[in-house]
Length: 310
Image (cartoon, rainbow, N blue to C red; front, side):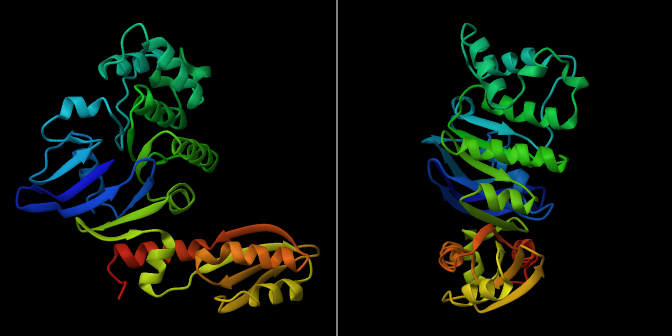
């Protein structure tokens, strides 16, 4: 669905991105990671036909971005880092305006607006002025304007920026729901969002692509095993023995033990989670939580984006 080859963009003598090449298949949800200034936003702007590249090529859904930008924009939904909202318009007016800009016939625009408002939980503010909305609702309107014309590809630049924890969970749920009908490239600094919503990662540093793959594949490349967090109901010794019995688990630490619940940290790659779950259940224990350690995610991100992977 997305084919990027040798993409380069100069601002004066400085290359914001240099020789980027990657592929994204139809239906994939891909996370785009990098520190501030790494080139993520520039890349997304080029993919959205907002900027022209200095060299290289981008094809989306078979169309060349540089040669057919107008046709391409009908197939792309783009949420920039700052949602392009007009504060004097109501939510409904604005979404209808965007729908018609993208070529949705006027007769179909009201039903398209209603459908996208339902999908993004905006019906209750349909008649509210954009300027009166909270930050969380404004972000949802930003996602809605990217969806209203039914694009095949979504490019989302920091969709959870500035949201509180409850709003982040709502946004994460929305992103998960998009995977069935859209190809999505999402830029974010919120690592749990990337971990829980994306099929794989693209990591950019100083304008160059330095890694791509699943978290497990990137861990293997860096030679790290990672941490799997396990919570069970049952005695700590039985839980510890169950985890140690799984091939590939190199160590187990009991992080906390309460009256009826114990949390353990297993030194193991993310891909061992199904085997760990089976071992816990086979030992007659109740599995309460099975997740990857956030310190592992942060370490992986920093090692790749700061150039400390060797």
